Length: 393
Image (cartoon, rainbow, N blue to C red; front, side, top):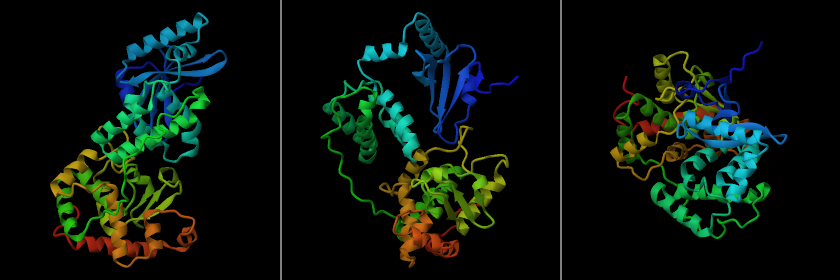
C-alpha cells in the first residue's frame, strides 16, 4: 500500500507550514472534500482550486487565494461544484457564460501554463508582477477592459509604485492580450495606443564620496540585511540570485559560487567568483548558521529564502541620503569600478554573467584568475573610501 503525501486534511496550521517549491508550483489535495486542492508557487503564493475531470477533460477552476479564502469557504465552494457536476452541469462553462468572456486572471493562467513557463526563464518574475501590480484587473473580463481603463490603471500604478514598475506591469498585460484568441477572445487589445512612461537609460553607480555614506548606512542594518546588501555589492549578481543563494552551491575554500541556469536571466549557468570581502561575510554566516539550513539568507518568517529586502533598502537610502540609488545599481557599481581600475569589457561581462553572441567565445577562453584579480582590485578600491571594516565581528 502506498501513501499519497500530497493528500491530507487541510488545516490552517498544516497549510501555513507548507514550504514553496524551488521552481514552478506544487499542489496538495484535501482528503476531506474531493476535488479541493491547494497550489503554492515558488514565491509563496497559495490558491485554492477545484480540480475534476468534467466531460472527459481535466478541468481546474480557481476558487481564490489563501488565506483570503478560508478553508471552510473553499470546501463549501468545492462541494457546490461537485453538486453541479452530479446534476450534469459544467460549472466551468457556466462561469465563462456568466461573465461573457474569460477574466484577465484566467488569461494569465492560460498564458503561464502554455507559454510563460515553456518559453520564459523569467516567468516567476511575471507571476510576481501580476500578483502585485495587476490586482485591479484580475477579476475583469477581457471584454470589460477598455483603453481608458488601462490608461487609468497605468497612471495610478505610476503614482503609487513608480513609473518603471508601471511600465513593466503594462508590458505584461499588453503581451497577455496577444494570446486572447487562444481562449476565445477575439476583441481588440485595450493596451494598443497607450503610451508608456518615458524611461532614461540608467548609468547610476556609487561614486567615491557616496560609498562612505552607503557603507555607514548599511552597517546600521541587522545581520541579515547588512550581509545581504554587501554580498549583493561584492558579487555584482542579481537580487533574485542572492535571495536564492544556497550553501550547497558555495565553495568558500576556492571562492566560487555556482549559480544554476534556471536562476539566471539569460538561462545559462554561471560560476561567480567570490572576493575576500564576500568570503569573509559568508564564512561568518556559515559558522553562525544551523548547518541543516538550505538558504544562505533564510526568510525571517521561517520558510524558504528572503524574497525582497525592500524595507531594508528604503531605510538604507533614507539614512545615506542616496534616495535615487536602486538595488540594481549595486551591480552596475561593481562593473563600473572594474572599468575604472582598467578591467577589459570581456572580463567585466564574465564577472557579471552577461551573455552576448559576440563575447561568448571570449568568455569561454577566460579562466577565473583574471576575473578574481579584477574583482579584488575593484572591491579594494571601494574599501579604501571606508574607515571601518565590512562587517562588525
